[in-house]
Length: 399
Image (cartoon, rainbow, N blue to C red):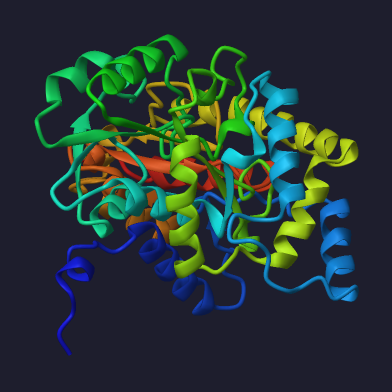
């Protein structure tokens, strides 16, 4: 069967390839083998809080399971609007909010609505793999621009200007970022957006980890800049609803009809049950629980990253949000005689039974020397992983 060129140019999502290998090893474990520790997937160990689960049960029990508007329940759009006002002091009218089948659907809708064949979208290298594939699936080209620790692994206005061409349509940023957990300085983001806007371009900002910001300076939404920024968000990370597949998109007012038409045809509507459940995310008790969990994620970061440093895995920039550690493993590769982070990750998987993510998914410039750790697991699991990693590298005297 002939596969479309569109499908053929989409690379595997290597995070999931590592996950499959980890599960195969776990399934083949002999009695007495240590349990596999999963620090490879960005999924909170917390599930939806009680009020959210109760709301889902009520929706099912009461038969509220029919289609909703393609743009989502009006009440949910209003709740999201209220969250922006209360949490960030930003006015985002509900009619500019489109509820989607996860942030993935939000990105797909935005890319299909705005990108033509041949358009280039500037993105940092490293960045989340799937984001560039959404651009490619819309027949655009994701242009990856190498960034380093001195730039917090984020694009600068100077680099956007340097790489802007006649084919450039805009930028796709992420703040906080996966895999680095770093955010764009708000002043720099403002400079990027002004430059892009002056050239008639689009500024898309992936903000799915926004609620998990740990520093006031970075815990701001890009929507504060003006009403032309396009923001992608999700109930998966801060709201701990990964498998519910629910997100949202904030777009300029004149883009809503186009996005709605696409949503009608591609998705009909987001999950009705998930939407009714998500209404309870914004209850005071739920929000208090989310803030408690955010503090727990920060506490894990504050323990885990210094411990990585002590065993020789350098984290060049302390994450200010999300739950990741982007660690330079070049010294470990040299010590073990392994060529790059891909080989190192699989060696650690087999010998230490700790699943981590090699940098291959996230770019090409320097990803071969980085691995990503997820700190979304419990502190007990993180402590055990650190102990195993210490034993693993301790067994290598260098080559």
